[in-house]
Image 1 (cartoon, rainbow, N blue to C red):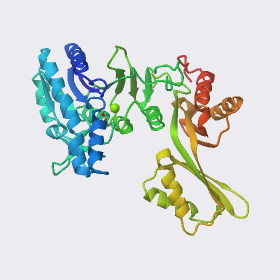
Image 2 (cartoon, protein in one colour):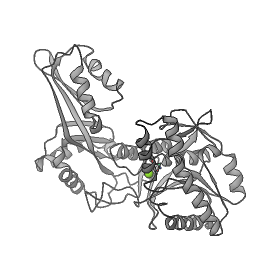
Image 3 (tube, rainbow, N blue to C red):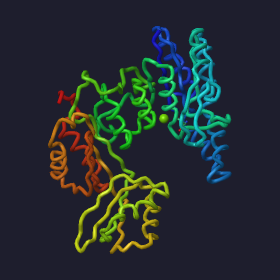
Image 4 (cartoon, rainbow, N blue to C red):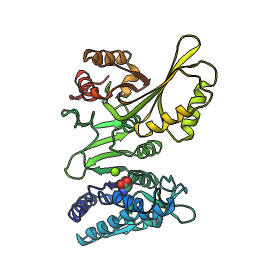
Length: 408
Ligand code: ASP
Ligand code: MG
């Protein structure tokens, strides 16, 4: 019998009515002859509520106790959903992460799944039951409750699908798929039928928050077909799989963007071996993630060194640079009014000149490009934040993304 792992996010189980509706969807899928394992998030807003409770007492809260607290959100929804299923005549059983068991490392609040014992689940499936598992949580080797980081239920679902060798992992959410870009910025953005893991990883890391990034990495590593679909309306959603010949192989699959960018520039630093390491070591030691880096030859053996960080880390990074010893630099500049726009598509691999087209389109709109970075399947530019909407819209139109693409 085909095995499907379904995951329902917080809005999908946000009220008892919604939970009853989700139970109906599960029963429909089961009656089509599938074994079903369900992973649920906490009711929408619940994890935030718990986070705030903890902050009223301690900041930061004790990491172990924080996990004990946060894991309760999902325990509410697994039990309610199991009740709803049973009430509608479908035998079901709920498990917390620890009960399954989902074994993780001991990094509280950001644990990684190490191993899943699928025995209990298999037994229940063999008895015709639907199995409902709490997302976002596990236990470490000493039986301490751990959580996987915000949005971690996606990862639970994919990890379970991999462990159970499921035929598909379906992520039900409040959008009906992955779009060519954010429909709030471009109203005629188009839902993609299919996209490959590599593209999805780029889209997710660039700010398309449909899926937790780690869940896509996991799915890609274990080759679990992932489908994103709406729990509110019927439809095929978007299938995320390995790159294959049947794909539409569009030149560009989507335009991702991120508003959370900031850049720092050291003007006229001494151009000597070790300078990049000297600047970036304290930055990474402070757990600040660096994204783009540009260094250029200046005059008199000096160089300008620019890098970008998440906007939340801007002040921290600027303070670190200002405190840096033995740094002969003319000036340290910062700008946290920048955004990043990226074209993503595996079709770019076999096509030259797309970057030039992109720069031309932006130039025609009078948009100045401040930084550029490229990879095989992505071109990113940094621009002033006030041009974000204009930039994304003109690229979307110019590359014809509102229509299904012809093969590259
Ligand atoms: N409830 C957790 C959160 O809000 C996990 C999840 O929903 O995936 O982050
Ligand atoms: Mg989520």
